[in-house]
Image (cartoon, rainbow, N blue to C red):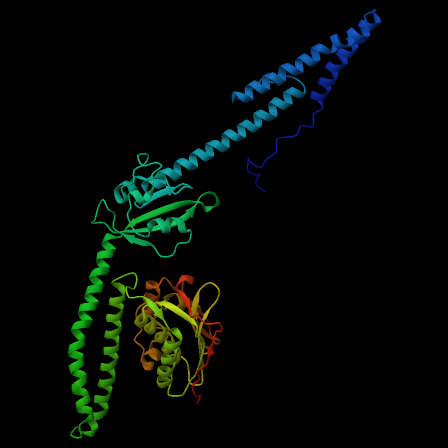
Length: 461
């Protein structure tokens, strides 16, 4: 086994009785001198103090010496005195040596940490318990206009102006990064992450990354998708119109009707993909919804249930448990789109006879919208990628069900705009649960005394 760390080792305990024998010998010599003086006729009251005075003086000398050396932080080095005082000096010297080694290791670690922090291209700023700047690396001067030690003790909000930055620093719980443009350089786009740091997590570590190139690339991609989708929508509408005319015309030959029907189905599918892409583009334009109002989620669920029953054609059982007094502060069209996507996915991707359960309630931490099914479930390796665009667990089966592969991506963006999060739980053979967790502040209660619970069920084949 390896030796324990130096900080945990105990000072070596000597088994040698020589120091103790030396002390007893000195004390015995003092007592012998006192007895000899008394035998020669000296008064006992004077002989005993005079004989013990050198022994006591020796102890006081070494005690004063040790106190002076420790107070002045001097290093105890040989030669050490004989006897028990030598053992005391030697033990303290060993502790001093171990402490010096620990300090050297800490200094080397601190130096390596500072060298690494200085070489990091991202800006690093440490805020103290009062949320004031305590340290910053050189990259912070370029990205955030924070220079250390020039700005030591100042508030970060004096350099970085953003309406929610001060609230984010004080919060203590941080979700998505904050994207902002620094005041000193409007051409930069930074991604700020703030994390609890230090003793009792009362300090803050601010990490700022330059995402200017990534931001512009995303803007180009966003504009391209929006423009391409918009340009494709018009010709597809024309094609769909002509195909509908040909399919309904009695002049169309019988052997042409099936190809025309297939083309109409694929045209409708392309139109659905384009509409979803345009929806995603609109959602990505801003981080938060501008038109926010109380939304009656129970009423929205009722409409979605009827649409889901029409989609299912009676092959699924759809049940809703709704807290009718619980309203949600948000954007009604966006929330309707997100909730309907989750319910329609449950209908599309579960076999006939499955049960789909829609829940709307407050779980004590905030409003929760959940969709549960007892379908085939999803393997764990697919769950982290479900919200990616066009990602499919079963490509062939998803296309047959008519999905575009963009529904969960839309759900994710809508929830992000409402400061909510999507939680997916699934087990193969046991079904899946998709839960939307909203902040507690977004839930609004109707002025009623009793909570209503409604249930809507569809027929089972």
